[in-house]
Length: 67
Image (tube, rainbow, N blue to C red; front, side, top):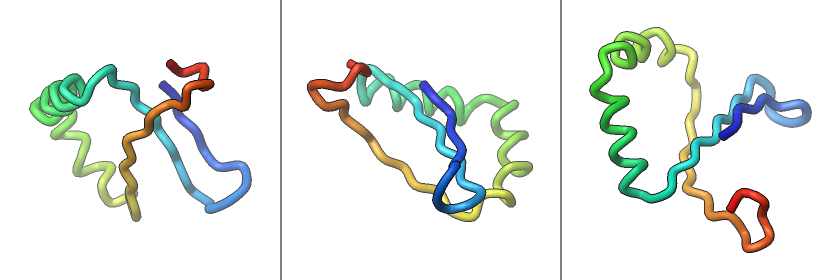
């Protein structure tokens, strides 16, 4: 859905927004990703670069264009 870096605020921050229609879709897609050998090979390369991670499930407001 989107990928962002910070212009003002905490340095070296990257935000990636994923969109799922349902919680079940999220679980299915994450399970497929976790089973993908390419993802498994990539994780050891990226993990040393991650100092903190936050996960949130967001719900759009009634007036949001992201319905």
